Every structure is written in structure tokens, then in C-alpha cells.
Length: 411
Image 1: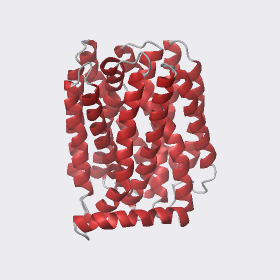
Image 2: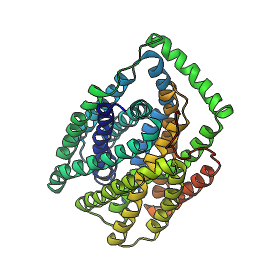
Image 3: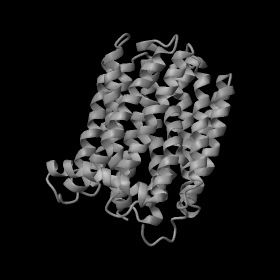
Image 4: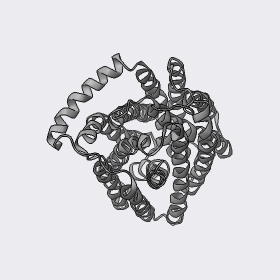
């Protein structure tokens, strides 16, 4: 294993997790929904859900053909760089969003989420290149674990600005952390493969091959098909929880900005613990085992969240959610990596992104609509999330792959 490339790969998780922590999960989502739009009757939930849905639809539709383009035109690292700094720039511009700037704030949210999510397609595709099969589970988990450290650092940096009600300062700080900490990935990850086609030709071939790959997944890769179908449902639940947790805490339970950040600190450290503890079992027991156990845990999280009444109770739920969050994300990425034929990493991870982002099209929109149509009652929407985890668990049981990766000579 190329240790320098592996460290750079892990550090990118640190970098992009700063965006998740401050923009998606705590400060900007809550600021936009409650302060910029207003959420007395769920309007903020609706607009934030619409922003997430729009961004995920763009990523979902573009990921598979762009993944194929990256494989053929040798531009994977360049695409990853361009998308990363699109997100960094949009995050910095969020400092200009004030009360009533609904459309401007929405546009920046869409741009930032598109850049962040699309770059992950290319980032994930590096996993089989930087780690051998028997180390992929651990490296994937270490990436998430270091990412949670990045989240904690970003929240600590943003907290003084939030307490001073200087939200622009929090967004600028996050943008700087994201941009600077991503640099090692672009210096030390493996270079792009030599182009076999021109970019224009690769675009055409990419769309054609996307259709062919979809047919191959359906007809010739049954375990990939079964896994992606299960992933569609349970990732929808996870995305919905991540994108609305701060808004739920603020609107339903009355959490202040400071309390939301402290809550997310708890989630990050428990997620770090979960990712670390499940790293070796992912290789020795298999990613299917780990994902199944953590989906049961997520079902319990949703039930507890529906009945929670106090802030202290919600902090306890956050610990349970965090330990499951780190484990299920790392194990899912490893699960997909073990199923991909060599040479098709970017393309098939594009489909992995397609499924994950497609799921995020519906969950946040359903949550936002349910809250808006019920006059801001977020507890009703949480019931739908629980059903998604149950469906994902049932579908995952049909996947015949996902066993231990230790001892495998090749993918």
C-alpha cells in the first residue's frame, strides 16, 4: 500500500467533513431554514429540502456518465479538484446571505452541495487504488474516523462566530478549512491514467457506456444490483437524518445554535468511536454483517427520536445515531468496493453515487413536504424515515456477497 497516497486519501475525508459539519448538518441548514426563510409553518423545512433535492438530482443524473468520462479521458483528479473548489467557493459566498435572501441562499446551497457530493464520486473511486483488498475496510473506516475529527475541528472553529451571531465568519472559516485541508489529496493521490479518448469522445462514450453498465448491473451483476437496491432505501434514511437533524433540534426541541453545535460534537465523537470499533470487523466479519447490525441500530434511533421530549433525551439518541453513522457509511463503501470489477472503479462508483444521491432526492423532499403540510410537525415525517431503514435491511438480506475481505487475494 502506498502510505503517502493512503494518508492523503484519508485527509480528504478530514477536509470535506468540515463542510458536512458546519454547512449541511448544523449552522447553515438551521440558519437558512429558521432565520433566512422562517419555519413557523414548515416553510424553512420545505426550502431546505428543495435545495437538497435539487442538488442531489443534479449529482445523481451526472455521476454515472462523468465517472465513465473520468475513466476514459484521464481527468478524474482534475474533475475532483474542480468540484471541490466549487463547493469551497459557494461556502465562502454563504457569508453574504442574510434574512430574506431565500433564493440566493438556496442557489448557494445547491452549488455547494453539488460540488461536495460530486467530488466524492471520484474520491471514493480511489479506494481500490490506494489499498489492497484486505485493507480496504480499515482504510475506509479510518477515513470516516479522521473525517469526524475534521468535523469536530470545524465546529470548534465555527463556535465563537456562532455565539457572536457572526454566521458569515463561520462560513468563511469553514471554506478556508475545506480548501486548505483538501490540498494534500491533489498532491499525493495517484495521477490520472493516460487518456484513451479525447474528452469530447469520452463524453459520448460515457453516456453510451452508462446505459451498457446499467444493463450489465441488472443482468450480469446480481449482487451489485441487490446491494444498490438496499442502499437506495437505507441511505435515503441516513441522508434525511443528516440534513434535517439540526432543524429538528432547533424547531421541535428548541435547541440554540450553541446547543446544536454541542449536539453535533457528540455525534462526531460517537461516530468516530463507531467507525473505529467496526473497522476490523468489516474486514474479518464482512461489510454485510456490519451494515445489517447498524441498520437495526438506526431503526432504534428513529423510534427513539419520534418519542423524545427533552434535550437530554435527544443527546442520548445522538450517541446511538453517531455510533451507527460511522460504521454504516464506512462498511457500505467497502461493500461496494469489493463488488467492482477491476478497471471500472470510477464508473461503478458513479452508480453508487447515483443510487445514494437519488435516494437523497426523495427523503429530504418528503420530510420537508410532510412538515410543511402538517404545519411544521416534524415528528410525523420521522416515521417515514424508519420505514426506509426497515426496507433497506430486508433487501440487504438477499445479497449473497459481502463476506470477510481478509484472505482475499484479489477483488
